[in-house]
Image 1: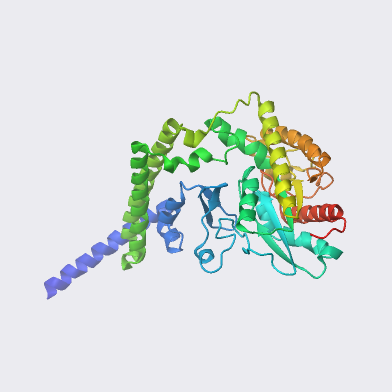
Image 2: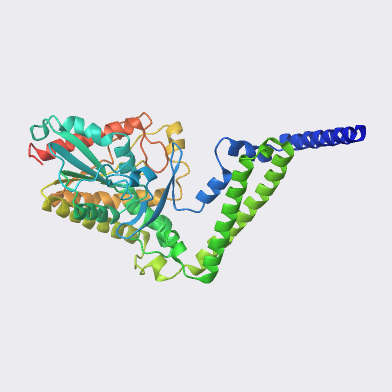
Length: 430
């Protein structure tokens, strides 16, 4: 018995020394220590690994919107599980925070639909349409009615996606009273920034060649995709089993796991680079690129993009007015339009710096958009150029170098839009 106890004591001392040594190694390397701590807090590195490589968007407040190919307007969002239970909604159709779906016009209500990219989507999400309604509901035509907001806008969308989304929703039976299009930036920036350099048709959805990469039938591509998926799942499953085990409290086990996980992460990243390289070399078929567009110079491409935007606006007006509704088109403000907003150094650090790669496309493109916008107005479209909305505003408005607005900017934009819509309606009922 004494011999057994002595051996157990030696084993305990050995384990204590091993645990102490592991603790010291972890303490000397916060990166290794942080892997288990992060997972224990609910941020599974394996889950993050599965998210990497997806096409979608990380949200400012957390979370990830994963996008999938859509047969009619390019791509849509995979809705949350709760959106797929119960009555059909615009969320279930792939529009985040889209609102209810009703085949017949809701009684005693005004249905306002908003379309465009992320500026329009965030404007709707954070109450911009409701702010417009606060002014419109005082008009005789809207008195006593309730507001229904339907959002057909989404991050990254550019024409003709808004046109296709409106047509699709109308064909499904959605009955709008007012359709608002708030766009411009994506229409002239996304094509020269990410499509044309990759040899993709400029009127395809943004990142189209990457979105269809998994449709590639090349055996090498499929093999690499499968290998990468297997490694991600193995990493996630290993972490899940470890977190469910009492061994998670062992410093030695944590050290061994961290070394293994770091090695696996490096392997996954290397496999991803191999996959991306193969995509760049092999993904040049019609599925990914579409036809070639003879755009010529940068100015010529910007002019073509603005002309396309002009035609899609006319089409959206025609679709809207054919149903007896009202169409309003607003060119969204953007800090890269010369003279559009005074900025101090602090706001420039947020709104200008870091945007050198795409800012020239916005500056050039907006010149053509404003010219085409004037032609829209001349043809009877309720079009309004908001690019000078902040020309006298010295306080910070933009929250990034793309053109997204903070609370103050959205409030000012809602007020300007409401005033123009009220003026255009001139007392007519929807």
